[in-house]
Amino acid sequence: ANISGILLYFIALSAIENDSDLATVIKIILFTLVLESGIVLMAYKFPAMEKYLEIFNPRVPMAGFSAREEINRSVGTVWDYELLAEWFLVGGMLSIGFFYNFKKYIYVFSLFCCLAGIIFTVTRSAFFLFIVGFVLIFTLVNILRRGSGWDTVKIVLLVFLSGIILFWIFPEQIGSLTKRLEIYFHHSNLLSPEAINRGELWKDAFRNFLREPTIFGKGIYNVDSLYYSARSFHSLYLTTLYKIGIFGLLIYSIFWFKMLYESWRILTAKKKHGNWYTMFFLFISVILILIDGIKIEYLRYGHTIQFAWLIYGLLIVSIKKSRENNENIMVP
Image 1: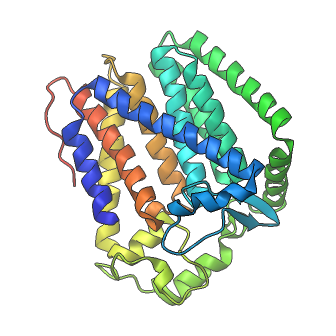
Image 2: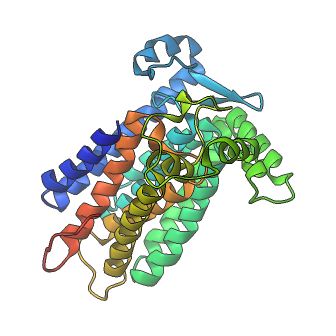
């Protein structure tokens, strides 16, 4: 799974030859997420259909819905509600980006489906990060890309309208999300591990496995092979530290930093290139994936690893295509 994700990254770098190819891949991602939102809705309305989704199960059978705080949270065919929410979060950002770029209302529909998907997973972090991404987008777009004001107004109004429609159509799921938000805001320290249900998990991880991190880690096997209180460390960075050690986490950090730095340098250049919006929203998507990685790791399943590396690959491709001299990018 780890190797296939990296291979997919390099396939993207070699196979995507122009901006049209890049847009096509993103459209396929959005189409897939629209289908996934439909699957989530159908499984919620007709629980009996869950047996037909078992073909998508990971090797360890799981329930179609996961219960947390007596709330059903949809897992779709990803089989993890937090990572599914992360996919919908990325889809929401890319939908907004394509609306800016192509001015087509079909991307408002994909945005609506991704918002509905986040609500059905009842995931607070994805909900908060959507708001953070929303604010970040409209602050930076109107600073870095002049002439986007009217598009920004339309997107804000459409997102607000989508929220009203979702509240009207899915009041039960909205109520479940509201309940989880109330539980979160009852904590005195909203940034504490306890507030995000990671207190005992991370204490146990440090106490038994991460107290003395090694240089090259313990291997890339899943954490659920350990005698541990949960099936994972619930953190991209803790999991990376355990699996490939201090050296591996350093290499990852250099890769992430260089990718985001190169993106930012091109995005803030005076000359705006043709795929500026695509790069910008991929840039935002990667940032949100890395922030979400503080409390969830995509290293759990092969398909979630592949999705993350595909998004990395698309951002690197957009960087490569945007460079005026079209020079190759050195990747750690």
